[in-house]
Length: 169
Image (cartoon, rainbow, N blue to C red; front, side, top):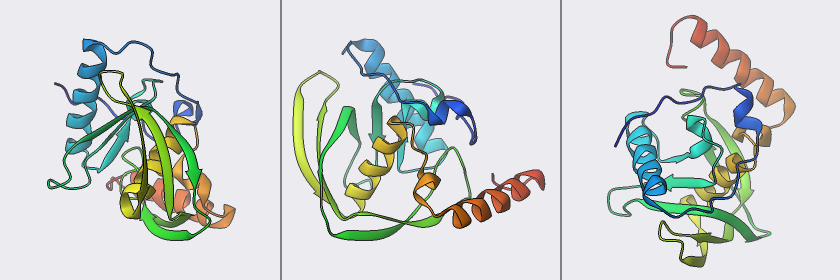
C-alpha cells in the first residue's frame, strides 16, 4: 500500500460531490489500503477518497486499535436523530485546525463493504460523528461549513496565518 498526497483546504476538489463506486474489485481494495496508510501517516481517525483527490465514495475509519479498521463504500445517511451532540472536529486536509461542531447524536447509515455486500446500522457517539463528518465530505461539504460564518472565518484566518509561518497547517 502507499501513502498518498493529501489535498489541502481550500482545494476546490474538497467541495465536489464524489461519484458512486460501481466496481468492487482489486483496485477498490488497493484504494482502501492506500487511504488507511495515508490516514495513519497524517495522522487521523477518518479519511475519504476525496481527501486524496479521488472523487469516489469511499470512507476509511480507525477510531482505535480495539475498534479496528472500518471501510464504508457508497455510505448514505438514512436517518439522523433529533438529539444533538457537540464534538471537536478537524480534517487531514486542514491539519492543526479544530473546532467544536454540533451534529445529530445518532444516525443510521447504509453502505457496501469492499466485496459489494450491502449493510445498514445505527451508530451513536464518536462513530456517529465521524461517519456524518466523512459522508459530508463525500457530498462536498467540508467540516468548517458546519460552523457559523464568523467562527469559520476566524478559524481559516488563524490556520492560514499558521501555515504562512510554517506551522502544522
